[in-house]
Amino acid sequence: MNYLLKKHTIAFFILFLFISNFFISCKSQKEFVSLETTRNKAITPTKKVKNIILLVGDGMGLSQVSASQFYNKNASNFNRFPVIGLIKTSSSSDLITDSAASATAFASGIKTYNGALGVNTDSLAVKTIVEEISKIGISTGIISTSSIVHATPAAFYTHTKKRSMYEDIAAQLVSSDIDFFAGGGINYFNDRKDKRDLILELEKNGFSIDLEMLPNTTKPTVSKKQGYLLAPDAMPKMVDGRGDFLSNATHLAIESLSTNEEGFFLMVEGSQIDWGGHDNDAAYLISELIDFDNTIGVALDFAKLNGETLVIVTADHETGGFTLAEDNGDYNKIKPVFSTGGHSATMIPVFAKGPNSEDFGGIYENTAIYNKMKTLFFENNNN
Ligand code: MG
Ligand code: ZN
Image (cartoon, rainbow, N blue to C red; front, side):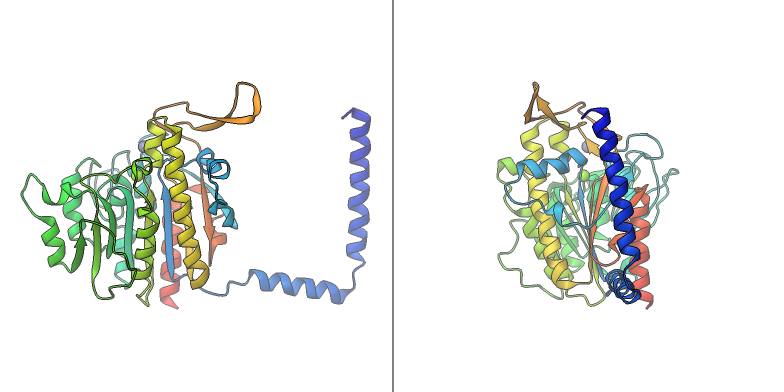
């Protein structure tokens, strides 16, 4: 566009704005009032938050989310969110966080050092949201495609100085307030240095445990807590045939936890999006991302029917410095490329839908996810 043409276009646009403004201001007072009323109606929250489903795509930055627009043959469930925010994820020790520090920010609302789970910078235990809301009768669940003792799920029930203390973490799950869990990690429960059989201990604590598969029916077992440990360590990759474990487990957890009239909190992790990033393996990453996208659909479908459920989707950090680049000058072809085998410092998107979802717009620290969720749970409980 040449300069003169540009100038004319701008002049025309200003004229257009002026004219349209003139017509709007000429609207009758009555019309104006009715417009205002509709607007007020639209923003009045009809229901309070009873349940929160937090879905964490480990290592999922904006390029990973964008991949769901280009590589998923189904319409991306990310398109269903009306509210988008961005979080800053640096930990207390490092500009670039690891999953442990970031999950602790979500679970306990504090910045701590990389590797820490549920402890502060002095390695002292801090309360988790699971501990706090269990006290007011809310049910809690965690699901991951890693082992259940891996950093992201563990931050919601453990207090350990180092994320690698897997056997300690497993022991802490037994005495935790968690009511439902599903993931891998059998070995940390029944093949231990201390010879304890944590499977037995979980059953003594009221859990029904399954080490084989998820039940075919989603008929909720009302009275019993449920635990599913379906692999010796991590769950298999999608490309190795994991199937619909993540969406089925999410469906099952929702069916079961939603029987509690006081409400529930469920954390669902797409753990291996991160591992595809670390491996700089685009096929691995994208298959895990699509599985996670489908699982978001399960949560949103329930929330739509239920009306009192807030769904939040975010990530702990980005992995791989992943981007969707042009392929050798061909702008009609996307080449997924990586800039690192580690994590990156890029801001992370937050998607929210449901009552009070508007609280999640803007740019803020990852610790605010905890603060916002806690406020909503306690506000609901006090009224
Ligand atoms: Mg993780
Ligand atoms: Zn990672």
